[in-house]
Image: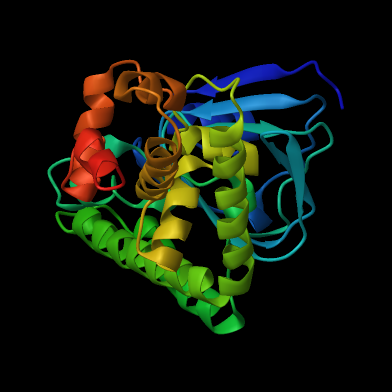
Length: 303
């Protein structure tokens, strides 16, 4: 893999339009494009891209190579991806644009003053990686495309007092469908996700049994071990188990702490430091919250 990477930081929609060699956007804070209308374009070198605005892409036909973590991913079928401002993506040299699909560009200021400005922030899929994209069925893709087309139709009309409101209403609907279909994808991939849960448990077991580990495991640590984003991992586990990654970590930690309390004579402070807590008080607080007992009270049950 070519280790030399150029960095492309795109601050405005107009800057991206210029970089792509297409006409300026009709609105400085919002744009919708069809990949069919893009000029022929191929990256000459590996490029790290950062954009200061939201991007939503529907790629219907694409031979694309992207990297997340240590793993490259190929996309040759229709997928929907969403990217939040400042999100970093690495595009490999030789990349070309999809030959068919849509690209939505939305600056957060376009949403300011509307409920969607706050509503968009909790949507986890904006923080997912490219390998966690939404794979659409034909029916789902048609529903999504209909909304893209509605937005495109409004974008082409002369701007009036209702233009922004109509576009934002359609954006809200689009994001609601994305949320719905991602939820469906979690469910239909339940077998794969069950395997993911086992991997999570194995990683945590190895972590706590490794006496050289001196830090508490975190959601970010788990995600990095699995080549996933923390948000996607937590959402996936939430759908599968009803618990977030952080809650699963805490449960595993308490389970391991109980074993140490009942099978060794280590002090509570020694156990806290062994588990990775900087302060024993933090361990005591978590243990009490999870069991309604202090570590000492729990130990006394077995003496």
